[in-house]
Length: 211
Image 1 (cartoon, rainbow, N blue to C red):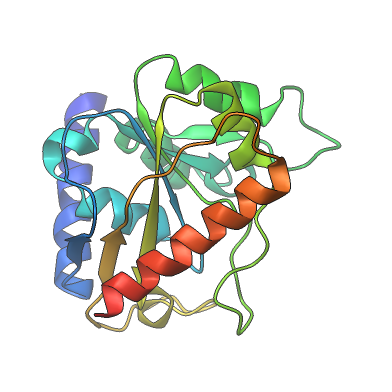
Image 2: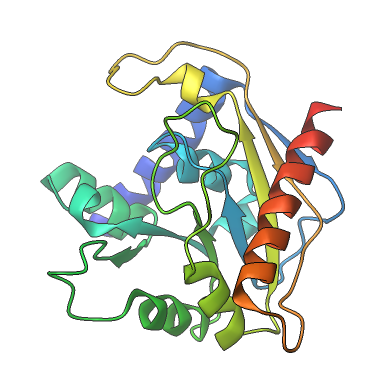
């Protein structure tokens, strides 16, 4: 019964996302093929990974899991059900003082199960006027652990205007999700250089979606 409810909830989420945002996926430099990938994106709303997941073809949705903060998604029974049973999320503890397991190990372990992942290298929602916050080192450590997996930059446009922080009722507005050309960690590449290159790749993807 729980599986049926989760399936129906997932279909309802996809339909609702399309009705509210009329989301359009742009594949700019990469194709939606069934390959294992890490999708890394800008982060301005708690609905960001939902929109990315919705933008994927259904065959890719089934193999793609969001990396999400357990402190937020386990706060209520309804959110816990959605993240665990609809999205099959990879939950991490973002609090260094309370965590009992290394988030990078959790993420790499999920990759070793053959799944693709959605993650946000800024580490938190960007509420500033800057296009992107500085990237946390997690993306580098994951790329270092599994350098053979493509890292796909994904730029989400307009979702923060659909559901501004603190608001409950969404405002219908067209959104785009642009998937850019993949990158990989180069042999011997320093952490700072890689994070700068990844950040630049995401900003370039944003420019591609604006064309």
